[in-house]
Image 1 (tube, rainbow, N blue to C red):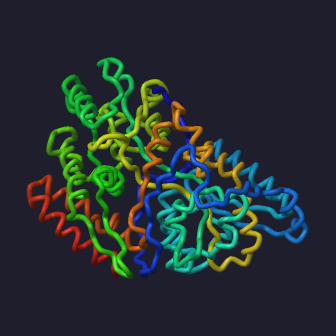
Image 2 (image 1 turned 30 degrees about the horizontal axis):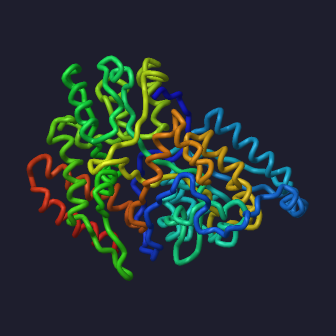
Image 3 (image 1 turned 45 degrees about the vertical axis):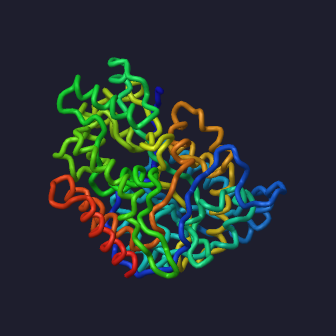
Length: 456
């Protein structure tokens, strides 16, 4: 398929090293399978109420002269700036309040949130969905249960609130979803008359054919860096594996069970079978993107947010009809499960503008504005009918198909320590690939370490 560039400020593929945090009891995240074409999950059969400008405007005068501070994550771009300008103008029309908007670049997000958690933060903030449990544990977020499922939001499937729900209180509303798919060199596929792979065997065959023609190229890039679990998880979940499950008040690791072990074997096999170079064991998506832009990678797992960087890194040579996306095939057949990523919007803890902040969240997550946020930001919409309509879209169809089988990592604030700080699975994979441990031993050791971290 041919794709066009989407400049996005959606969820960044990288991860910052988080501050150490206390343990919380969070609801276990279930499979975020958003069945395309289905009506809203868990809602009533009656037509849900929609956000009404006139209803909000009725309370407008009481907020005249007020100013609400809002954080957006990432770097602004023309599409995002236009969206926020129009959203904030509509908010002022409805409430009479001004909005003070600040963009927080991704490399600064962790430090900015940490400082705000012990000092002064915004009133409302965009937040990565998997970061909600961590910052809730720091009292950095206020519960917004009273507005989370009212109005248009009753159409958002309940299972998209897994990360956002802690002890039966909702701390954020899904705003836009993210899933990963395989980015590939469409021009190379066309030149070598390779069809878009629909099975894992076809993907492997395509990778090897390209490697036979282009020396020093990763047919399918191994990701062993900060966001490695997005690739590993796709393989493991597709085999029926899990990282850990909550049993009572304790996390129990599942890394040694057959499903996870099979997916782990596919993951390490990318290097062991020669599809990816052994020299790239610590590369993350950003590193792989740069290699891709310099003709060193044929395929890798990512999302549309990499496209602007590829165009820049390739000095404009790689864009448009030279690139394409397709869903990652599962080794067991069909489409592989994707990490259920995405961005939420939340009320900051300790805000003195809680009522006004909730009005902003209600407007931003109404169907009209949430759909625009996702579409114009290169993310997937959280409203089922809008997502279903994207299934056959040339640019977004691959992501919609992947998101239909999306799942989430353990919903515990300590997951970030296991994933990014301690790199538990990344280290296990390197030990296997470098011949320091066999897979059984490496996974047993990793399982013990993962349990210790999650159960702190």
